[in-house]
Image (tube, rainbow, N blue to C red; front, side, top):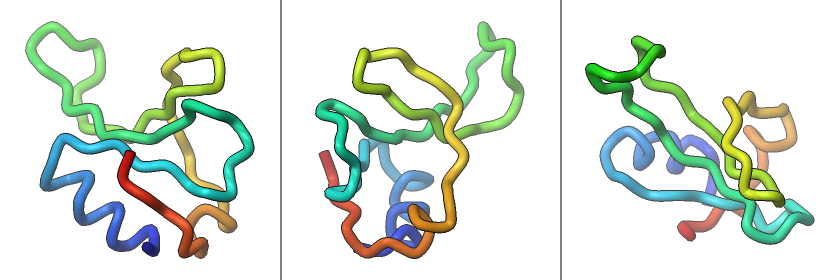
Length: 72
């Protein structure tokens, strides 16, 4: 699926997405919506890295134009 579909569904559901083109096992992106205990005040997309670390994610042009996105 394309990233436009992913973005629509990230906002509507609590789901994780991955690209087939990513080499690392266990990597995914998801949407974080801050709560009262968060330091962040607006929703943001984060990535789980190969090592399991969670980091803010910024899409590359390749990610935005790819059509190999899947639900985890």
